[in-house]
Image (tube, rainbow, N blue to C red; front, side, top):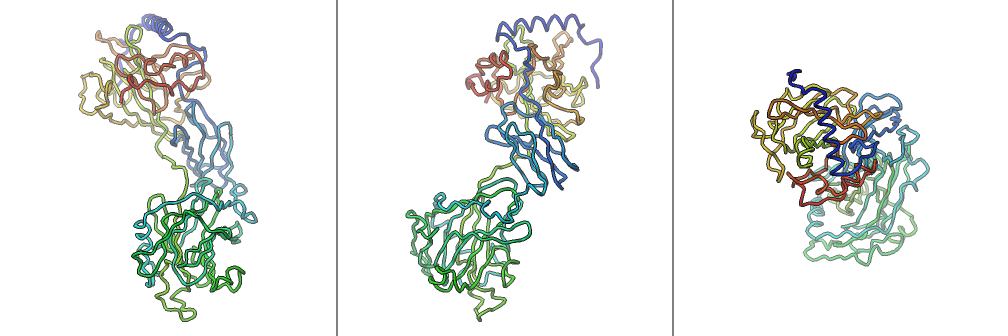
Length: 530
C-alpha cells in the first residue's frame, strides 16, 4: 500500500511550514549549533581480530547495563565492526565465540588471536590471590542446607543427590573475580586448600591458600588465623561438626582464557602439613587429574553462589588402604564461591524517536509520536515498538519513503485501538501496551548520521490534517530545527502539554552546544510520563 501523490502538499507549502517551525523553535529554545543533528546515536567502529573465531558480538555499557549493538557470524580474519552507539556510552564488551574482552572508550581494536589468550604457562602470578578478602555472613540454616546434602557416612561419589563430577573454570567471558569462603569442614586429616592453574601445554601449578584440620576450627591463611570475625558452633550437630556463620575469604582475579580449579592436599598430621612432608593425597576438582581417576568434589549452584565440597579420602571404588566406602561422603571441606561478573544482555540497544507534529503553533512536548527502535548491527531485522501517541491526527510510519506495517495507522499499533481512531495514548500515564512490529532491513541500516546525511533509521512520519492533506516529518539535517529527535531507549517522554524543556531543562543547551552529552541527566519528574 502506498500513499497517493495527489495527497502530498505542494513543496512551497511544505517549505513555508518548515520556515515557520524553525523560527518558532529558535524563539522557544534558543539558537541551534550548525553541527547539531538532534541524534544521540553516533557511529563506533572496533577492529576485531577473532583469531580462529567466527562469531562476533558487541555489547555497549551504559547506565549500569549492557545491551547488544552488533552481531556478525561467519567472519574470517580481522573485521571492522561498525554500530550505533549512544554518545554517553561507558565502554564496550566484544565477545568472540563465547570469550569476551572489554574495550575502553577511545580504543579501536581488540585481539582474540591465540597469542593474546593469557594462558598461564609460566606465569601463575597472573592469577592474583588476595588473601584478605571480604567477609561472608550466612545463617546456620543456609550452611546446614548444603552441608547435609552430601550425607555424613554415605558413599556420595557415585553422583547421588546434588553432586556433579568436575568443577573448573575455563574460557570465561571476561576478566573476572571470584570470592571464596570456607564454610564447613569435618574429617580426620589435615588439609591445604588452594587454587591450581593450567597452562597452554597442560602444566599444573598450585597456589595454597587455606590450611585446616576438620573438627578443630583452625583454618588459617598464610599462617595466620583466617579472621577474628569467624564464629563456629556445634549445637544440634550429631557429629560435632563445626559451623562457620561468618567467614573471611579470599579473592581470585583471573584474566580471560585462564583455566583453573581447586584442590586439597591431605596430610596425616599437623607436623607433616607444616613440613609439607609425607603427603597422603592431592585431590583436584577435576577427576582426570586425580590418582584414583575419581571425582572428589561435589557442587551445587544456588543463584550467584556455588557450594563446592571436597572428599579427603581415597575413592571407595579403589578401596586403597582398605578404606570403607562409607568414608567417601564428599563433605570434608566445603567452600562458597561468589563470582563478580558483568551480565551481558542480549536485548538490542534500543533507541527512541520522538516527534513533534505541529510545534510551531502548539505545545513542544515531542510526544505526538514516540516509538522505540531495536536493532543489532549485522542483522537483517529491526523491531519497532510504539510507546506513546500524543497527537490526535492520522499518522503513517515510513522507512526510506515506503509505508511499513502494511500501512497500518500508528494509533492502531496499540492494544485495543481500532483503525480510524486517533486517541491520545500514554501521555499522562502508561496504560496501553504497544504491539511490536518487526521489519526487514538492509545491511546499510543505521541510526546515526553519516557524512552529514541525516538518517535515524530512515524513518519518517506522515501527519494528516483534518482536510486530508499531510506533512511528512523526517530526520533534521545538521543545524535544522527538529520535528523528530533520536535518544537512547531509557529516555522518558514528556507529558501532554508539557514542553520538553520543562521535563529536560538542558534541552536548549543540547541544541546550541553540539555534541553536548549530559542534557538527559537533568530532568523534572513532574513533566515526565511514568
